[in-house]
Image (tube, rainbow, N blue to C red; front, top):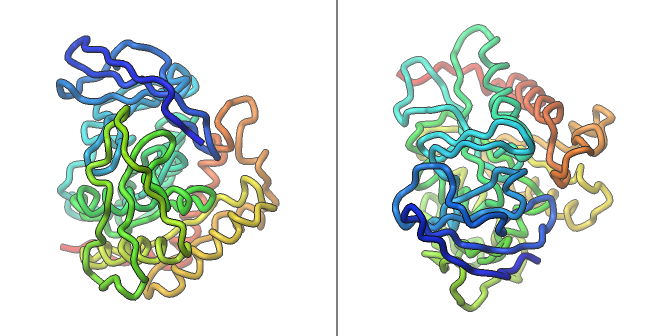
Length: 350
């Protein structure tokens, strides 16, 4: 489990650098200090800057966020395992996208964690970038794929981001890159990888009214280095995940977008019974959400005879994250699925 082991401040250039320590858990690294120097990126004075252990390799630095717990630093440029890492002016690891959707363009907005963020690969190797290029090769409608992934985020943070920010891009399809290996686990706690985060206010599934915003506790999340009682949810998984998945579906529908879940994570350890259960729970929930598309990426891997070592570069310390060829394969799987489902056929709204 991740834990805070040190706390320090640096006031150089008006920035406060929070020094944190963590033991990596699951397929994600997070937090911890490698330097006391402020990041080489423009941020607001007195912004709380979070730095991952080994950031000289991963390039991971974040801003404390009063809603989400942490987010990407806008205009940040670095490298991740020696490959180009660029965060745009709106805090997305992507090229610039204005909120206003250009005429004749359709958009896929991708929610996700470090797999969508692109841990260990270059900007143009992330499956979102590859998918956009593949879509550009098709005749007809022009598509943009907007990557909103942030390392360490869980489904609850992705829901909140979509509600507060993501819908400004007027997506036609909201695609949740759902990592069954950790997204359910992360949504059950108000503290993850050494940082505080929001937690869904617990209640029976039937207590959540469709088309009503979900309620959260632990907002604003305590700042790093402060002490607050730890909150966790220990009840049935479905009581957390169904409201979140249904909530994302409802937000998408309210804004005339379709919702799709692309689930993965079992490829990391196919024999893991817990991850299998979480994956099956997500599939069951999605099957109850009318109009929602569901793709089991793990089964697509296995159908192609692929195992973990076919999807990752064992020479890079990335804890099972996809390498460039893994990302390209995911993009190809997504395109094949979208074409099969006819999800790319509708004309853009005028």
